[in-house]
Amino acid sequence: MNVFVTRRIPEPGLDLLRKEVEVEINPEDSVLTKAEIIQGVKGKDGLLCLLTDPIDRDVISAEPRLKTIANYAVGYDNIDIEAATERGIPVSNTPGVLTDTTAEMAWALLFSVARRIVEADTYTRAGKFKGWGPLLMLGQDVSQKTLGVVGAGRIGTAFALKSKGFNMHVLYVDGRRNEILERKLGAKKVELPELLTTSDYISLHVPLTHSTHHLISEKELQMMKTTAVLINTSRGPVVDEQALVKALQEHWIFGAGLDVYEHEPEIHQDLRHRDNAVLQPHAASATVETRTKMAAMAAENLLAGLRGEIPPNCINPKVFDKKKRITT
Image (tube, rainbow, N blue to C red; front, side, top):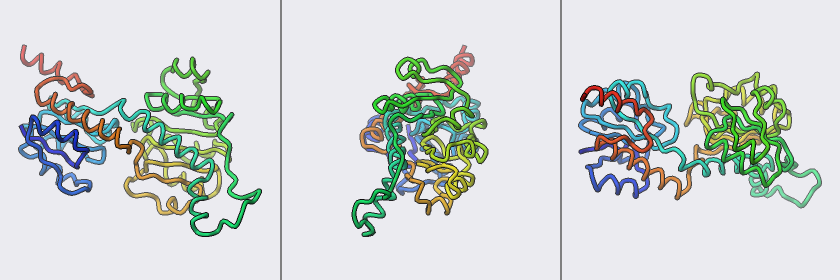
C-alpha cells in the first residue's frame, strides 16, 4: 500500500509507516495548497495530514483507493468528517498526548503577559535598563487571583489543575459539570458572562465549532476587568482578532497571550506591535517528546485503518457500522 504524508513529521512515526507501506512525503517544509494535496493523494491508500491542510470533499473524493485519513493533531476542523464518513473512510486524530504540553504553554503565556516578560526582555536587550526602579515594568500578581477556564475538557482540566500551587479561585464554563475540578480545586461552574466579569485570567480551551466562532468578541472583551489577561491556545477564530486589537489598544484589558490566530498564519498587523500581547507561532505542543508521540500515534492510526481495523483514535467509528451492514 501507498500513503502520502503532507509534511515531514518526526522520524519515529515515519519509521513505523515504512515498515509496512510505501511512503511519499512532501519534500518541502511548507504548507501544501489544496491542489497539491489532491495531486499527492493520487494513487494512495492512506493520507497522513496536518491541521494546516484543507481536507475537504474535493480532496476526499480525489482518489477512489483512499481508505483512511490520519490527522497529526487533536483538532480536526480542517477535515470534512461528513464527506469522509459518506465515503466510508475512517478519520483519526491524536488526543491526550499533548494535553499537559499545551496546558504548560498556556501557563507560560499567562506568566509572560502577567509579568511582562517579553516586553522586559526587549527593554533590557535594547540597553534601556539603567537600574532598579519602583515603577519599572509593573505587572500583575498571579497567586490568590481568580482563574477563568473556558472549556473544561482534557486540556482545560489539565491547565486548571496546575493552578493549585498558586491558590487561585477557579471558575469554569463547560456544557457538563467537571467533578475533578470541583473536587480537587473547589472550582465553580458558571455561565460565560459571570466568568468574564469576575476572572483575572481567562484561558480558552474550546474546539472550533459554529457556536465557538468569535466566542470572544467586542461585547465579551468589554465585560472583562481592565486588569484581565486573555490566553488563547485553542483555535484562532474563537477570538475576534480585530476586536482584540481594539481592546489592547484602548486598554480594556491588561494583555493577551496568543498561540493561535484568526487567519493563521497571517496575524493582524496592529497585533504584532502591541507590547501588551505575547505571540507564539502555534507552538503549544512543540516539545520533542510530544511531537514524537504524536507522530507515532498518527502512524499507528493510519496503519490500523489501512488494515481495515478501527484506528485507536477514530473520530467517525460509524463508518465501520456501515461496512458491517454492507457485508451482512
